[in-house]
Image (cartoon, rainbow, N blue to C red; front, side, top):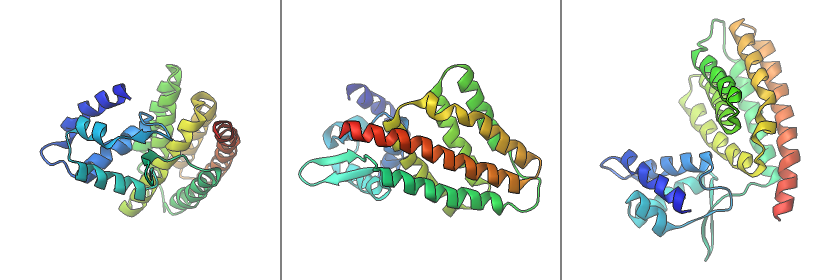
Length: 231
């Protein structure tokens, strides 16, 4: 925990002159997504508030915001913890992803599409794989789907899926097999990108639907075993 708190202290500069709860929650959300605070970790108000240099009230409001996003859970007389998802949570996350991501691709309209961001994160994932950075591949994979959703040009959809992807990272941290989890999808990201570059959104949607179904099966298989072991 000491190392995590040191990194949080480095983040203090990101708060600027106004230490709002929203800014604090942005920092904590990023740290949770990166695995600095794994699922099940108790978050100390005193330690985190001291590291960030924020008041107890500001930190509690940030905790409340992240609890609303289902990233944290408050346990009576015990404190605030990074949430441990159930298998049913993971299945629901993928159900939401399939509904939203496939609808985005289906609703793209006529090509050409603005795919520079998508192409950049595909390159990011391939570069991380060459370097053997499998957690980096996982991050690039999340960015791929975020860029895919951004093609809808909808702030509301972006905000909805930001929370969904943050929850998804909680599951990935429990699975903790980044190469097995993410390596098969590097080529599949390329295939979806190429389908969109060719203007074939129907094929891209079909590839995406199969991709998400396979990913759900793979994640749930390992997640169920890991949660059972920890239980």
